[in-house]
Image (cartoon, rainbow, N blue to C red):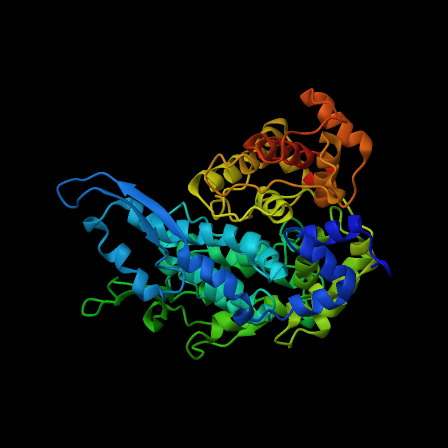
Length: 526
């Protein structure tokens, strides 16, 4: 990073390692330095985010549905009820689904959505919020595809994604594999001996660990032919590895009330469980490693997780994705190599991911990557609110507009997760919705909170001065030509007072200028 970072550099850095720079962040970073900020962010302390917890406690979300012969009509504002609940306390929404409207089962998903937006804007631990979004994409589940996933989403977000976002990847893999949300999404809950479901096994290799580039079945269809296999170190995987790993995970399921045999049934709690009689205990071979028959409970699946976590292709695949997220596309080769080295060195560390992220964020490639990453709609909304001082409250209208911009939170249908390339967010329709997103926030279309008016230092309240102040906050710099271009488009004289500062018209015009400043390319990317 620069020895003395400029305002433009700080805005860019906090727009990629966080969700945007507030005025106080600019002062803190200039005083303490970026490295100190990173180190603190890599070790988030929940107790120091009390303000966010208070906001979550105060938050109320509307729920409404019509009456029928089983339940009365509902139209009310409710506090969040599921964010901190274990899965078994939410699972009655599934067990008793015939006794309630579907809006009740959507409620846990909507609470996580609202909390995600609120934390992105207000949390002190900005890096963790960015990483939570990254890992939700990496280990994608579509919470719109089934009630069970919607109900399990708070547990998945809290106990899997957030708990492991800066931790050890091998531990992360097992948390994902045993999560109710993933067991439903990729159908492993129904995978049994004699009828192994390969969905999870395939995505474990292709999307969660080794990556598509390590799929070698187009060249080799026998395990012995794969380079390195005879030495126990195959360069990649083939379909046989997928099939065998699917067998290894049979019996990993959910307590959903299913019958185990003619006499026994699982409880209906929504929790993970292992059913020995559903497991295929016979010998297996995965990544050229022989598995002995009838291993102890869950040992086969855990050995698969050990093998894929340790594979060099996994280090390269995941580190490349992390570099792409924080730096840009294509990710710099030298940085990927440095990240892989850190990943491999820390593979047994409980802070493995944190150590890799440190290498990326303190690299010269990160420092030089200003403007290389298009902000996703959530980042755009959160960054605008943080920068302009909106005391944002998440609402359904806001998260619907974020979805219109191309990011339906927790609702990407295929297991690939939301694309991370810039082009996806730069189509004509996407840009129209992105501009509407910042304008709607500035003008409070969705009841998210009024934007406070901006008063430039020195008491100069001309239209040019107010526009320049917005540009300086949003971009770290205030090019006069950009301010004048905005004002020319509006037909507002640059050297005239914007409005009487004591009137609502001043706040309204100031908000419009902020939105137009945020539509500029310099703010749309970080």
